[in-house]
Image 1 (tube, rainbow, N blue to C red):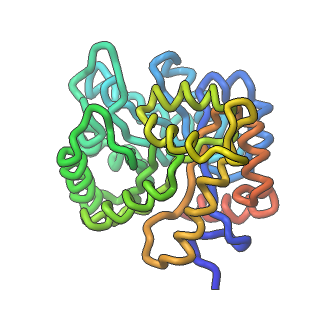
Image 2 (cartoon, rainbow, N blue to C red):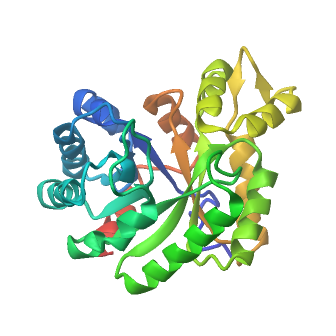
Length: 297
């Protein structure tokens, strides 16, 4: 019997992400993404609020599910945060968000994802699904005991909220390490489904740059050591070497909280989409059922 978290073909479904500028200026890329797919809208501090809202609206109009990043430290005030959610829900019809701390040269009064959740504004303004960040390799600036306490606080807030919560992780390259982290999360009392971040197909030089930025060099070094057909600094990276073991975990461990993958399109949306379609994580044939499920949620 196929696990309910897997598609009929035995593959994990996938979300992806795009910058607001990509969505607004290169709408042709959306043709590669099946209807109903969750597309996270990044906020790196280099796009205006208007562009972020426009991107979410364009995704909605193309029958995709926008998941805007809500980066706590970027808001100069609680009022700015409230305005952003109000615009996203009222102008773009957003019902899902990713709550993260984010980075800013000068942080505002809201300094963590927990601080965003504690405002109660997500529930008040109509957000139905909330993603929070996970770090299988740890977070460079946060001690493990702090991460654990934050997760416990998020569960307390989730019990007070009408929204559904999930964890979306940073990307990595070592599936065994991710499995150990998933086991640790369960020991901590985690009840949220987990969407594991995976780098889409890209050149190794590109991945090296992003790995250093995200603090996952150890996982990247593991990847390089495997060598052989898996990886070459010249040829590129096969993301199925990461995803196939995760799918095996779902079939072999019925109680695992792993529910989906999140594809980081470092090699470009088109290349990532081609990979997801070829492996069966995306399909235009099944997109209508995904869309129906999202609309009824």
